[in-house]
Each structure stands twice: as C-alpha cells, then as structure tokens.
Image 1 (tube, rainbow, N blue to C red):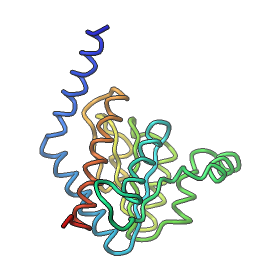
Image 2 (image 1 turned 180 degrees about the vertical axis):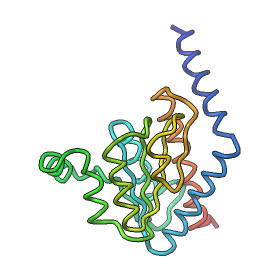
Image 3 (image 1 turned 180 degrees about the horizontal axis):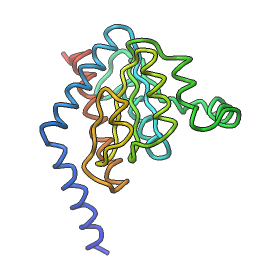
Image 4 (image 1 turned 90 degrees about the horizontal axis):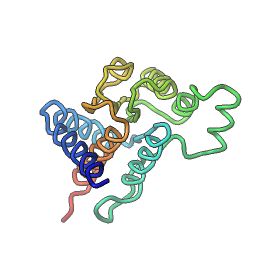
Length: 192
C-alpha cells in the first residue's frame, strides 16, 4: 500500500512541477490582470463547474468574497451552482445544459469574468454559459485538462493542465485558483 501512496504522491508532485512551464505562468498572470481590472471597475467574478469542480468553484469564490490570507473588504465573487432551488428548477424545466447560461444571462454584465472548471473541457452547461457570456461582453476563463477542447475556442484564456487524470487535474485547478486568489487579494488590498 505504501508503494501506491508513494506513486500517487509522486504523480501529483510531478504534474504540479509542470505548472511551472512559462506559458502557464503567463496565463495565470493574464488571468490575475483581467480579474483585478474587472473588480477595480466594479464588476464580479463568477465561477462554475460540475461535481468536484463545482466544489472547487465554490471554494475559490469564497476565497474572494470572504477572505484569503488576511482581513480585507469582500470582493464580488460567487459560484453559480449555490442556489439549489434555481438549479433544480432550471434543470427540470429547461435542461441541465442551461443552468449556468440562464443565470449568467440574468446576473452577468459587461466586464464581469466567468471562470469555468472542467477536467474534460466539454461540459455543455459551462460551454453554454461561455457562449452567453461572450454575447454579454463577459470575459471567459477555462481551467481544464490536457486535451484541446471546446473550452479552447470559447474562452479568452484557457489553462490546459497537462494531464488526463481527473483527480490530479482538479488538484492543479485548486493550486492555480489559490494562486489567482492570492494575487488578486494582494494587488487590490496590499498588506501593510
């Protein structure tokens, strides 16, 4: 069993080291710039995902709307799946593939940012949300796995984690998300 544990940890560490590739670092910098600009202009950051990625989206939204490293004013950031009555009503009445796009159409405004997390990059509900966001002038960011997907054609920035292993991709999404939140917090509210 220790070999299996060691193997999982080594695979995780090896993948995380690949996040140091220059193009990924540049993409993270660009995402932070877009988010800081949006928040500085009074806009919001929305997050979405499915399953474990929904939990990650909610976690990251809370890092901004609550606090991350230190006390500071809250930032307008929310995960789109948190209203269970809305989610179940729209999924039932219109279809699960429209749950995020209808909410973006109702809440989103030009200059907002929508960040979608999907290990496959093929989640119809997120893809439809990106399409709706584009119509409204909302910036779109995708965090996904190694394969080029629909995300790559619908987002302003897509980070493709170089793996097809779902748990390892999700771990990397959280590291990337935490770095984004840390840098946003630091730039908007520098610790004195």
